[in-house]
Image 1: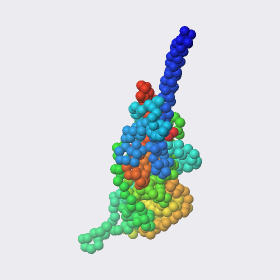
Image 2: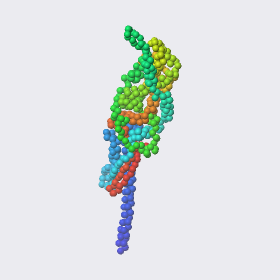
Image 3: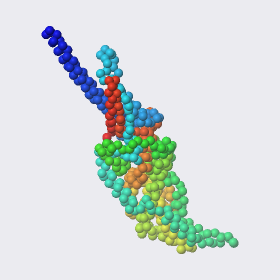
Image 4: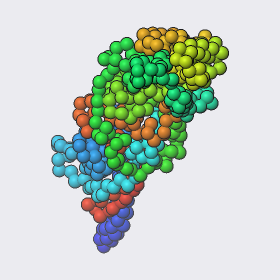
Length: 478
């Protein structure tokens, strides 16, 4: 009887003990499923970020994931499929060999659903996502002096009104006065009358205005890049993909986008006339950001014309204050009007000569800048390079001068970029990135608006043992 009693007691005890053991095992399974789920989600989401675009990092120091993965079709669904694949491989790794062949998976987990609901595309929020990364990249650069100088130079230029001054309208008003007064006529033969010629040398200078600026200021215009692009293929000219905007988590921990910092970044990464970037499609990239034209020639010409307009406005402001130069122009005007017997034309002719002289001096300034020289925003008599006779032979009067004081070509470009519309500057910069990345192997269809740097995924798993779990994670380059 005693042996039977012990056996029943032991059987009852084992039932309780085994229930506890199995409960503990099941609890361990539940905890392991949760832990493995979280680990697989973290590993998978990091693996997605590990697929950042190598060429974009190499050329522009930006970390973005291309949703097309080198293909032609860009969609966040591609990234969801990559994330699901990475998670599944970590939940049920492929195992072979003696140790694993016949062992049942203790957790038996599979990925359920993967949904990326939020993601920040480079062009979102008018390019703020891109510029956030730029601000992080430029955080260690000693930008203070450079940025302050750009601001001061731009303020000086605006204080003289060089961007808004209508020099052409003022010049044409004096030309109109000459037309209103008219020239005297003389009888050259019986019944035939002709105007007495004025022979104003300003007309010779003004005749060159219809010529292209580059043909006047460059000794060999044929050396200008002839690259042409199809603008419709690039971000600023096509409909853009959109994400969900700047990620709150990234905005909280990253440097705030700054336009001056972004402009400094563009000069760090882009080429321009005289300092072209090796391997780029368009050679004059800063000029493209400013002009937005489809050829290097047109973009350089746009920049040269704007420089010419600034310089002509500045030189005109100065020459009117220079008593020596105005006296020279007055003496020439008096001589011309005396010959044609029309002294009342002396005053408007004097001003047409001054405008022509300032124009030739401005062409000389642009030529000097493109040759690597310097030109101050506002000149003194010591900075003036041309004589009054230069208006008779504009092309012959211009010389390639690489010296001088003041600002160089790059510094004038920085002012132009500072004054430019923010959106045009941002989107054209992304055009440049697309142009250059597409030149590399496997990136023919690359789009900046298909690149994200931060994303939030909602994922779920189920186990063959009846368990189901969900979680949400936000990952990105911040």
